[in-house]
Structure formats: C-alpha cells, structure tokens
Amino acid sequence: MRASAVISAAAVILGGAYASASVIEYREIFPNATTGNINASTAGWYLGVGNLTPLGSGADFGVSNAAGRPADAVPVNSGPTDPLATGFLGHWGSKQSSTNYLFFTDEHQFDLASKPLESISWYQGNSGYWEVHVALRIDGDWYISVDSFTQNSSMGLVSNFPTQAELKQLNFDTASWATMNADLSQGSITDLPTTGTLEAYGLVIYSPTTTIRFDTFTITVVPEPTAGLAGLAMAGMFVMRRRRS
Ligand SMILES: [Ca+2]
Picture 1 (cartoon, helix red, strand yellow):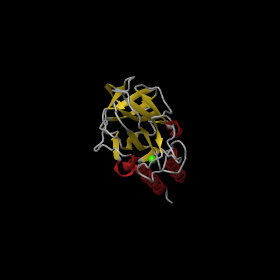
Picture 2 (cartoon, helix red, strand yellow):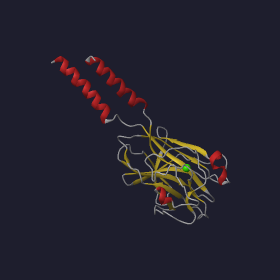
Picture 3 (cartoon, helix red, strand yellow):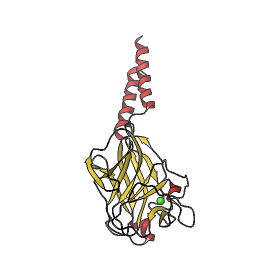
Picture 4 (cartoon, helix red, strand yellow):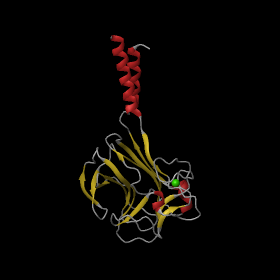
C-alpha cells in the first residue's frame, strides 16, 4: 500500500470513529432469578431517603423479580452477570411525606474527559406523577438535572410494567443542571463539569407517595479516539517517513 493510502485509511477511521461512536458505557437491568425480592445492594444500588445515607436493603424496597422492560436488554459494566433480564428496582412501601428519594449506584466509575456523556435513559413505571430527576456525583459533588420526567400515565399494576413502563431519556447536549442540596432537592443552577470522575449516578424522585419502579438504567457516551486508532495514524506516519528516506 502506498504511504498516502495508509494515511487516508487512518484518517477515515479516525474521522468516522470520532463523529459517530455512541457507546453504551453502563446498563443496569436489575436481574433477579429468585422467587422473591432481593436487596438493592445485590445489584450494586442504594437508596437515600431524604438524605445521602446509602441504604442497601429494607423491607419496602429492592429488586423485584417481576418482569421488567425490555425483556432482552444486555447488562453493561453492571453488578452481577446474571443473564436473566427479569427484574426492576422499586420502592413499594409507605413514604415519608414531602421527602425526596434517591436511588443510585457507584459500581462503575469513569473519566468524563475521555468518555463525554451523551444520554441517560430508563424505563419508568410509577403509580403517580412525581418529578423524576437525574443525579450525578462528579469528584465528590452531587448535581441534579433541572429537567424532570413524570409518568404520562400512572402505572398501578406491577404486571403492566413490561408493556406500559415509559421510556425516559435525558440528553446532555440540551440538559441544564443544578447543585444538589443535602435533602436531595435542587440547589443553585450551575454548569455540569466536563472533566473529572463520574463516581455515582441515579434518579431522584420528588416527594413520591406510592410505588416507584424503574428498569434498564443506561448511560451512553461518545468516547474520544482510542489509543489503538491513534496508533494506526502513527503507523501511517511511520510508513510515510520511511518511503521518503
Ligand atoms: Ca430488568
């Protein structure tokens, strides 16, 4: 191959990878192969009730063994590698009045400079119309999305989740952000950092009164060019120099 052809091929690969590579960096499907509910912490998730103290288990929340949505999602960088897709995360007990609930995980942390965030999506089947916000912890500080998501239709029956849970998605190119207060409410409007380590993430539910349910929590990123592709470009430059010598 002529040196110029090698350079061109490398440029095409680099250009293509940079422009279009949306990658699923994390997906939690909340698998539960048992005959009952299991602890949220078994899936690597925790609950904060009105504050950031992480609860891993409790009588009124956990991973349900009922069918989630969709039935065939593949886990990515999440908890146990149980291949069964049955299950979703929920809180079905009585609620403290006017209290915000934060479900979150810190099981897969990554660098934001090399993996810029693109979107976070999930399926939601709440039996009420409370605001649901995305929450992120970056280098020790929590942020909450100003954008919120509510049910289009309240979902009462757990058996309706596989067909009636609603897909919600936050896109980072249009989202706006605020600091998060200690009681899980919205603080001051701020820019979301684009560098640092994404340490934890999840959903804040504002003052729910009955059942919370969600499934298939997914984060997509648009990675910077990898070392392998940069190496291919370097190889092309090497061929060019050798031909000239
Ligand atoms: Ca699931």
